Image (cartoon, rainbow, N blue to C red; front, side, top):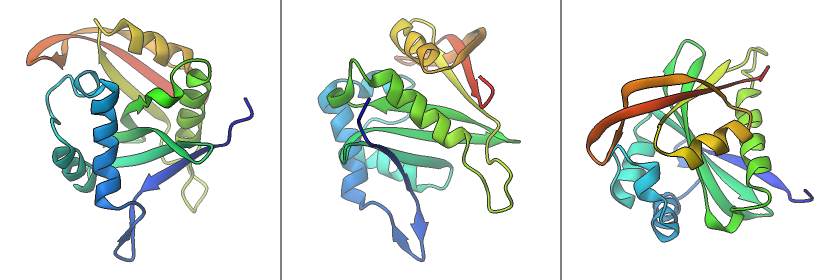
Length: 175
């Protein structure tokens, strides 16, 4: 793949954010346009661009915007930080669906899992996701991107307001 991939974090430095509020709200609008918002947020936690922005600004999430050849192509975010692992979520936009989507997914995961603090230690040793087990497409995609299925837990995910079985997938530097 000859494409240039970049992962730009959404953060605040000296009172200035790396993206405008309207840019972050536009990410959710893109999910709506692509028809992925109901699947990405099957738990019902986020239902609008305003809620997406508020969630990403609340300090409990670390959002990255994925660029391919200078074009916004998706998002990945971490939350529920514990020890040296975090829950991982992402959405690739329709402009990158297909041939190179797995390479983009692998790049984003490898970039995040290899990110180091100034002292040389890794920020994360593992990224983990819990996907409704009925979402076979997402589970297959995560595996192709280097994720390992740990198993299925009853009632570990929400879908359309109901507790459903969740498939646990993890990603490590060694994986």
